[in-house]
Length: 558
Image (tube, rainbow, N blue to C red; front, side, top):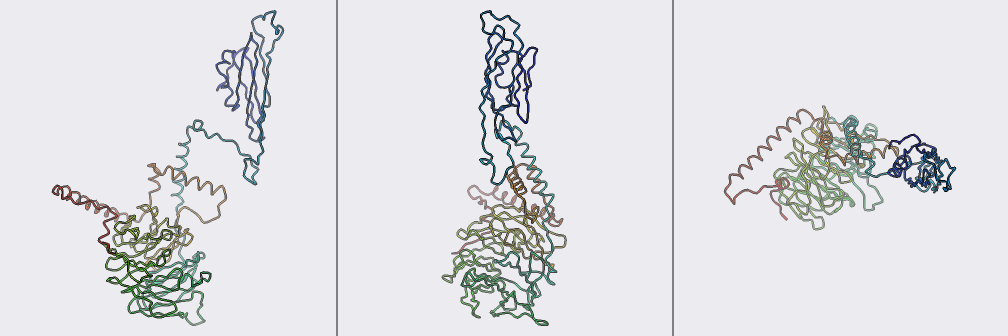
């Protein structure tokens, strides 16, 4: 509040080491009306009571002055002066010859140790902060501006592509697998029957083997042996040449020679997929039937079928390890129980599924990539309805993979793009592409969720950041705190139109954008046709509106 001045007004000074405040009062009447307000901003917590008799007064002040550097609370000085009253005092007054006001000051100094409120090992003083919303009327406006700036910077610094891994393959990459026991080891198989082992951290080739005579359809690392303390670092591959071969990745080819497989397993037909059990030395293959093998035997342990055509993909559940899922050419998803060696459920869909992946954190949930440009999340205990539909692709989804945390899903599509979805949201949070990347058949998260590896029809393996704007380096405490603060602000104000527009804006290839616009028109026409048919149907015979999550499912057999 602005000081009040007047001729002959009392003047009071309250000071401290870091500031000095002066104010004057015109009269005792104004003093009574103002109370403690004139110096409230300068001296927080101060109270003042005054009373005047014939121009004389008594002053009591209790001041709490917060000193930033001294970390103590006290009053440094107090001065009071007043000119003589223009009225002549009474002869009987005890203050007949007094020309100055008497002042009484009562001071309560408060202090406390820095160790009681500072973090351990930190001696920097922390200024007190009043969080009263009334004192911060523009707090939301400032936070919104910070959230908007953070969103803009995130899109400005979005550079997801890290680089190519090695020199790639001569033919297209049609199979890709990560070592579950390593952060950097990947293996890939191409259409010319060649297998390559990669070190992702150094982006170089470790081993190259001419493994099969035909297209390599599946790869898998063996996880553990019977003793969980012993790591098994072998690699299984399957191909259309009716062979499954077991390899030792640590084996090096002799000079002028080739690497030989440890074991070879022969089957009745071409193998389309392979998956390894998490804790036992067994693996499953997909051909015309699902066969379960033991690595120590050259004949299958069991053969399971549910009246299906050729099976495209087979996957072991990594939590409920006795469960096995397969997808076939006849548009079926079949689930098997190894404890009974029998199928437990069968799901018939509108179009066939190209890929399967179990959720590593939720035992009964899985995601499947379909020919209808979508990926579907299911709970195998309730197959009549999908838990979620992942949209945005404009061509068939060729591969899907869960992040190790189970919170995100990455999809590879025939439309030459990679999309990343949050597991509980229907639209992608990001899209990755390059001008040279062709149809993407494989994509996987690294085991630390920080990167993605993709294999495409052009024979290249590419490394991407899972979060396009983040960089891989050690952050200081302040940087980490700033990043967490920005993320919290973006989450709080993410519903605002401007933030939503900026965060959702992605650059996509012209072909994909045009195909997306055509697809949107086609889907709108289908929806309009259904509404017209329902509108002109006889009363009581209207067709039921089928939710999007149920349209895929045609039948469920148990």
